[in-house]
Amino acid sequence: MKKSVLNNYKIDIFRLENKQYVHEFEGSDDFFEVLDQELITKGNFKANVVLNKNETMIQMMYNITGSVELTCDRSLDLFDFPVNITQKMILKFSDHNEEITEELILIDRNTQYINVAQDIFDFIGLQIPIKKLHPRFVKDEVTYESLMKKFEDEYDEEDIDEDDLEDDDEFNFSDDDDDNFEMNSEDELEDEGEIVYSTIKSESQDDGETIETKKPIDPRWEALMKLNKN
Image 1 (cartoon, rainbow, N blue to C red):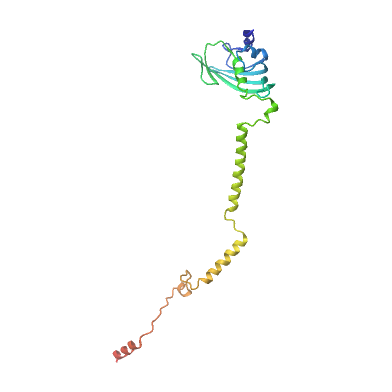
Image 2: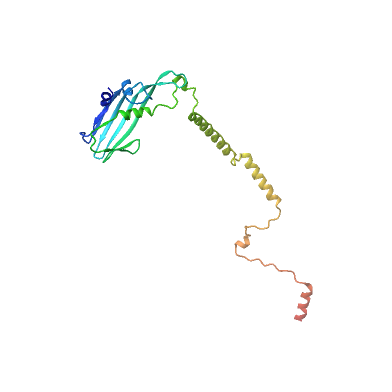
């Protein structure tokens, strides 16, 4: 029975031409029963596999929808867990078989068939949460991710408030402040008294005239000069 069920998921790639193909698969409880695992025992799914073959590789795009039956870790109640999966896989032709990454696998270029059953199960299995909770408990469950999201939201709000406060404190002069500044400036000029230096030129200087200032002559020196003339 195991072999007959899994044979439904085989694809003959050796005779395929270099173009795109679409394969559709379905599975139910018997699919999960024939696989040697205890993670999923019941479920159903539909898988659409788009296969694109060329000279060097085969690109495969999986689209899987369905649900699997899980047991709640809190209440032990059974519930259906929905799955909706889109996954890409690349099979690159080589001289040997080797798994490079989860999405890149080397296959012998003489390979006749590939079986997608294990890939479909692996993709579904990766969707199963570590802590399985019935939907009625999900809203009450506080997770690490939800706490971090709440903390980040609150932190962002605090940043916005602080930025607004900083903007309000930056040199915001009102009209009253401008009036006070002008009055104070005039008062300071009046209190300064005598002008020590000015860039304003007199009219006589602008016309090119020179002003000579004669100092008064000492009377004694003037009398001496008169004697010499006589």
